[in-house]
Image (cartoon, rainbow over all chains, first blue to last red; front, side):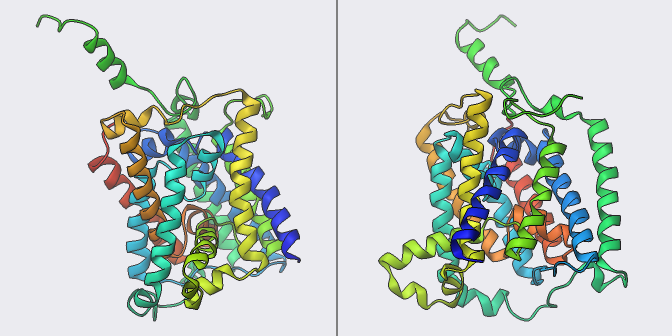
Length: 208
Length: 175
């Protein structure tokens, strides 16, 4: 695989990824902040569907011996701390490291600042990595997976996990249909407070 | 149920999620890696930093990410493609976006663009510092790691939601 081929494949896959992120509306800040405030569930639906689909296709590819899995090593403190800081950043950005590029693509200007902040954050970590590695990123139990605890092949466990996710998604959709979370401009914006503020500002205070 | 077209403004989250999940097939078969996004920030950031501070390439972590391997630059191309795909998709649907989403005036309690830009910069910083510490983001840990039933990814994603929900309730106003 030449570098040029890898870049062309990456671009083509990214375009499909970007279309999926845009059409599902999950890249909208309103969807991400709405999810983190537990009043919009489109992010969770896209996310869990992608996980379930990935589990099914990887179960097939791995079951037929076509691929090797590449789970990441477990470092409890780094996974917990990194996860919390990442989540705080996602809520304040209204984006994930991948979806911020979709925001830049559709012309959200604040996303350019998120992107630049992201480059600085990645470099700050890189400079700190030699110091942090012995504290947080060494030792640990290695590449733990569910197969470390249950003695069954990956494909079986992955299909079981995907089935559980499908059941959860069916329940989630029954409880809260996805169209209800789109908003009039399909950006997860429902604007009750804004309308109320504009109305009260343009009128005298109503008598009590 | 009618078919999804590129002119639609919105697709079902399930159609989009399946499409994203299927991208694991070319990722694993052609590039021998899983979908991910946050390493590309080290590849690009490290390459840029090396122009100002050549000593940065002495850090093994940076050297590993800026080496011109298929995997490193495939991911950079992937995130560039995300921007192109979203741009194409939105222009085909005919939707238009303001410079800043209308939710931010409510979430931040001010419509000042400067405040939003500062918060966005800080948020991007936290997001990538955290993702690199955890060794993955919503894509690498979330979509790919959980599909591989990795313990590290399940922990990172659970705490990503803990951090995100706590921040959204404590620091942001109701949108």
